[in-house]
Image (cartoon, rainbow, N blue to C red; front, top):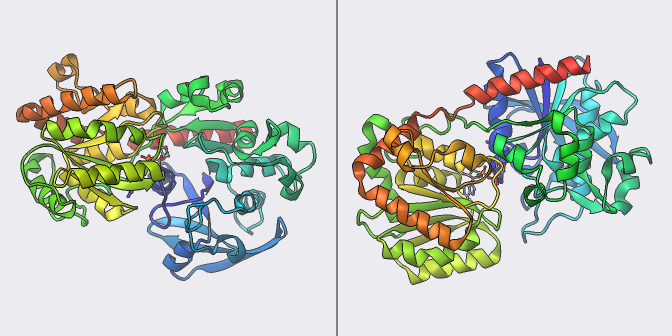
Length: 479
Ligand SMILES: Nc1ncnc2c1ncn2[C@@H]1O[C@H](COP(=O)(O)OP(=O)(O)O[C@H]2O[C@H](CO)[C@@H](O)[C@H](O)[C@H]2O)[C@@H](O)[C@H]1O
């Protein structure tokens, strides 16, 4: 089966979050199931710089009045189609934000053009290439099924995966005429309370909608988590799937990870000490044996990290230490930097994004904190399981689906892999930290939990099969 995946970020070329990891790992996982994936991505500077010997394979004369060239290249096992359109993608900031952290004002066009290119490729723009299915991710490529629906050519089945419903691609209705869609598409697909919503239009027009864990698929049917789209999603209930993310078990393997000072496995957990020492040094922490908690995250309300400053005193008083890597909301950044300054030796912070350091933190910390208010799947707790770093997570979405709480019964049965808490409040988080530190003091129990986590299958094995079956079902539906 041939699948065209359209994504706005893709590990290892360009990444701002978990979407890149999933878009980058899924094609490799699905190859084993007979799925050949080509991935269409924008030609951002980082992409153009990294790919070797790209070949020009098509010229788009006009995509919303923009000329663009399509390049093909292979990169670390991925078969890429790169939309080279410097006037839209050659920018000095990130994929979505300028160097000051502001949305590019033409994001509506940058991702509509990406989607239009995807739809034209699906319709046969490239000689000798015709995908059986198009898989799109989040609002940035959600217009692909819309363009396919309103084109004169036969529609190719489309699957939309929602990685984060909080970002919906909402723009002024006055931009609609520039999208080159027929007038009736406005009310049929795009209109959302008087604005345009790219994500909504993708939900309406895709053959099926999936999200990245079963619990989150249920949650987005409720007003609390649906962010205004719950009614629409319910109307697609028969075509809604929740498939938990896997991780690239080669990139995230503590035994072979070249980014670590000390490789280790479940049988050689003591070697984690080498990573712990490097981590302590990097974050300026005291070298005692208190538990090291870490945070590797966007610092946002979604991730619950506004609660962290309020629990740091307790964490430190109990002998814990905290290493924070992240950036995001300026208020949260400032509060955490303040806490680090007040707790030298106990709290260290690196502001920014650092893939390499994130590996060291998983390998050298004892606990990763993931107190998210909502979490479609979450990947950092999965990396943590593989690295023997115990996840302390909010009981929500994919976090609830992937971590087994260390309650009495789970501990007795030897199946616990982490600590869950609820509701997401500073008090509940404080209690969970206390419970985690009590568990840490029983080193026999602790290493049993570490080993249990390292044993869990967090690879794409299971979900790869589920995606391949879903693809097959959608292709059959299209015939
Ligand atoms: N400062 C930093 N430095 C280095 N690395 C950093 C970092 N901050 C974050 N990361 C990395 O970025 C990724 C974040 O992935 P998550 O799944 O945890 O959340 P995100 O909200 O981005 O993804 C959305 O999409 C994914 C994929 O479906 C869902 O799992 C998730 O629930 C949903 O919110 C991880 O690989 C993490 O290690």
